[in-house]
Length: 348
Image (tube, rainbow, N blue to C red):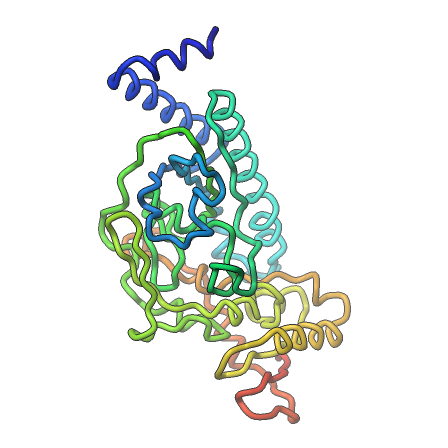
């Protein structure tokens, strides 16, 4: 009987349809906030018209009409204090970033999905970033591509805009949040896209802080993406280089050093990285570091140092210990040319 009442307004007239959908959208946002989401927004499907075919919402749910984007913020002290202070601890940020916050996002997405399904709308939750097709696949021409981009969804839903580093920056928290998305058949009205002051002034700290030179801001290599009526430009990111540190922890200064890892292996200064180099460096590091090597965590330095202009003075910047430690590298005498991988030790 309750179900009949909810669908009756949808089928009656245009004004009734709008009222029912607005009520549904209000309930969606209320449920998200009740599940500890700090940000929630809605994007319409037309904002994905220029997205690659296999990562559009319709590729996951053919009946899709809207995408709900949600985010939960990180505690500021996790960004500022990780690896700093007497404890030099990175285990809290590792656990909360990869386990606790991820589970909170999954819980909110699942509850939202079940709510919309109970209302009669097909709905599909997307996973938090962390799984990729590492190589091109069918119509996907890029490396390290997720099934669906939560950062692009956040921009499409009006929660964020892109920084030079190709990551999503929000006006409320800057870089200090994590996103998840829910694709639904429910025709929820889209929120306006962000139109305030630019959240990135190209201060270049993200480029300067990257120890593997994974971000290339060369004007001729800038990537363009169109979302709705807006076109964004951001730097080309070499995800093989980024993963060299963040995924397989070959750069101690980005976190592993605070768990005791001293051995580091740099990627080639130039050229593309292939699977063989990637795996060889990973196994070489693990062989020399014994059991500690796989028990480490790398913190993306581009995320940690990025504070949008209007939050400077409000968000405390972390100490750039990564760059300070990099000056104390002790390279092996057997190092070959700069184009090849180089082994080094972190000097205490």
